[in-house]
Length: 229
Image 1 (cartoon, one colour):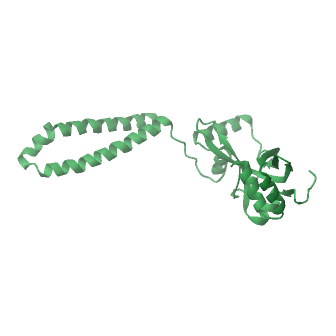
Image 2 (cartoon, helix red, strand yellow):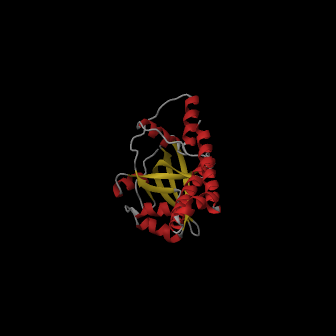
Image 3 (cartoon, one colour):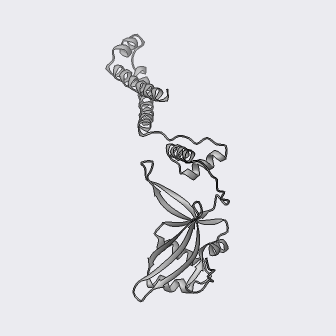
């Protein structure tokens, strides 16, 4: 690509960012719905040539980017106001040009700390790629995050299914309810004579209700155990 020097109409995004905020990088924000849930994915990119165009009524800011993970190039175009068009020219050599670009993108471009500074390509079979992709989805992770976790010697945690989440919520609720019942029941028993307590405990409607309630909680645990077998 032909090198284009900074002017009142254009600048190099990555060079400007490194001067203004060393250690930070541009990311392209996309939505991942492969797992059935909408999740933001931050793709590291290089922002190369950024320039403005348009007039007299409509103005635009353009960004030529390179996706680091795929080594693919893409041109982005966002509409800006006449005032922002003028500010871009006034802000030559200023990091405020970057802020104009981020604002114009509507959140699709962000700047954050560059956690991964080295990119290495690796060849793999289609079968292995499919297996890693499937495993990443089970853990509710992106492909990159999943592989990075494995390379760090860590074991990615498999995300709970909606059914498992429901069981766990029920168990937590059962525990909370039973603890409340136990505290209230002990207070009641203190006011019952010792001679009447056995019959009160065994024949009392309140105790029978909570005994049934606890059994339901145990069944929830049994269902969770069955899923793990």
